[in-house]
Image (cartoon, rainbow, N blue to C red; front, side, top):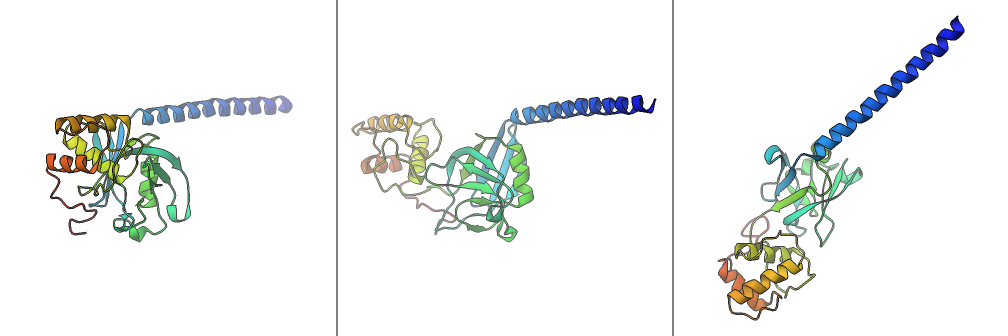
Length: 239
């Protein structure tokens, strides 16, 4: 009789593990699916050293962050998350790379928590490990990341044309938005859409519609948007 009871109990235990395991996996899948369905956005204010996490267009949480020093500034513009990884050392417990086209920048943890909330990084955004772990769990790839700061962002010192990248391209896109000829994002990439916006503005002000943001075009754009007398800054107007 005992020989029959033991196999029976093992069979029951195996069946229970199988059922609960499948149920748990199904539950995890439902949670992940529900999380990915939430409309999530990150806004970072460089001057305030704060990261704002929005879920379904409502402010969910505010976190302190370290931002880049003046000689290694954090990027500003409109980007998105391209990579999520579990790292270590100086990057803390989590890493989220941004789509910034002119360099590698990300949101990550730190092994130097005293620097969070200050001007201390090489351009990335440092968070307390407990905070970055929460953000990491709530965002997915392609989550928008809008980084704000003092405008104008920088001076445009070179002609900008198709395929150019950089913080100066972000500034051009910002000016074109102010001129109401560019409906796109401040991605830092000079796309055909940007070229069309430049042509439209050049036509408006009587310049040759080349699609290249020449010095003459930028000068007119600064005047048209009332930005020509403003001094670009990063952390303060006097910097």
